[in-house]
Length: 86
Image (cartoon, rainbow, N blue to C red; front, side, top):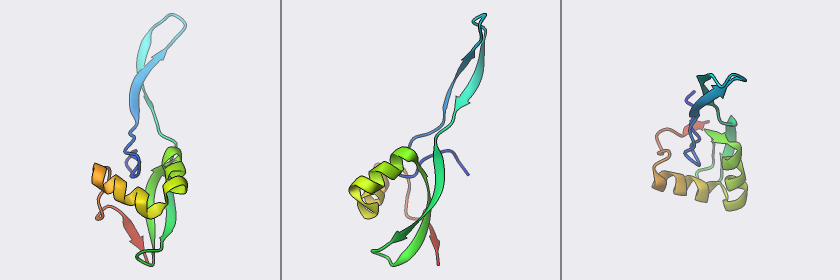
């Protein structure tokens, strides 16, 4: 599972661990990412997408159909990567 939100397009970031002596080592800042199932009313099917906590708030605010259409138009995902379940 790649660490990319399919709604917002957010990715894991790379940064530094900074110790007390200011020695820096690389680390990654991961997303708060979930693999969630949604019922897609327009197609009458269940879909499964990787979505972050911010993406869940966008889906609650705009609706699933509008959020998916804006994500596809922005290039964050396409209709082939959205898994249809049953």
